Amino acid sequence: MSSIDIVLNGGLPLLPKQEKLMQSRAYVNAAFGGWGSGKTRSGALALLANCLRNPHSAVYGDDRPFSVIVAPTFKVLKDSIYRELKAVCPPELIIREWKSPDFELLLANGHVIKFRTIKGSLEGASCATILVEEIHLVQDERIWLNYQARARDPRAKNRMVIASGLPESNGWLQSVFDGHSDDENRMTVFMSSTENHYLPAEVLDQFRKSAPASAVSRYIDGRWSTPEHRVYYQFSPKVHMVNRPIDRGASVSIGLDVGDQSAVIFGQTVKITCKTEHGRTYRDTGLHIVDELTPNYVSTEEVCRMIRDRGWRIDENSALYVDPTIRKDEVAAIRRVLPKIPIIKRSRRGHADECEAGHLCVNSAFQDADKNVRLTLADTLSREPGSVYHSVLNFKRTATNRVHRDNKLDHKADCLRYLVQGVLPGNRQKIQIMDRF
Image 1 (tube, rainbow, N blue to C red):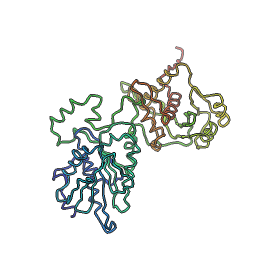
Image 2: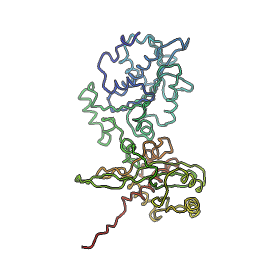
Image 3: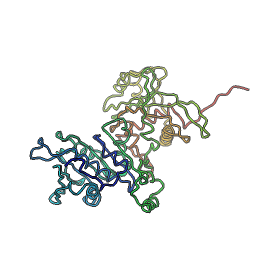
Image 4: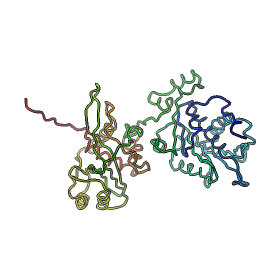
């Protein structure tokens, strides 16, 4: 059966973002959207399109190419994604169905579609396509990475991984799927409920009445929303991960948090243009994070050697910002390797209040009341767990509003706070010296 014989979606025009996802040849794809935005159908269309790109051929012999659809429960498989797949797929394309012992479809081109729940085993599977429905309900990034690794059939002409769900900022989801616009092997579309002209007006009206104001961006607009429990709630990958020229000859300031799992962040000051509430512009100082280190289980002295040998310019304009509780022996180790750099620490008094002031300082640096952005991160920085990017996105508060301490996140988040408080001390009083009249 040739592609010109196939009429998808019952002949109805696709929504623009459904068409975009269906035509994608990227390896990692995602459709995030609000209620009724068409995201589930987008995933079904993209998976079906890739099944058609990978028909049975001689290289498979008696084997068949296959794709897998994964959902949290069998009910979601049957009542949601299976129905959407049947709605977009012409009946003549499905030549056989199995409901037992496994839930599978056989397409006319010899491709098999398998339905599995999240609890079902996929170890060892090597498929052409995998679609994970309701991806926001997958709590562990390691589960997702296991699914992603399944789309690796070497005989397939095109391999795809597809995720579909609500744009919940649940810790790992935004880290994985946002901020990769320059990667041709990744594509993420965001779908608003208001963009789906097939959605009846009265349904959308009820959606708006059902969604709390704080959740409209997520449930209606289909955009990432900032969870109230995130410590650095002003951070947005699209705004703050920037491609700014980096001058290797310019001085760096350094944030350092020492311990079994140490953290180092390098930043350079930059001149930026800001605006007041009334629109007047002025020049100010910004901070651009250009590099980081994550030394584990090495001495303070060895960490300082790694800083020294990283290749950045450390001179009289540099400073090292550290934890106020740093020990005397750690200071002595720093001095042995970096004897001239000023070591700056905040007072120990009111330590908890000082931390909260620092968190406020970081949030204000990400965006102040006049929407000025003074703190940015180089888009070349890692997004892996343990990075400053990942730590900022996942540094959270408990239900009682206390900062949740996680050894894998704390060090980079604290390190950033020391550096921002030192270079951009927006929370402390300044003295203005004026000429005598």
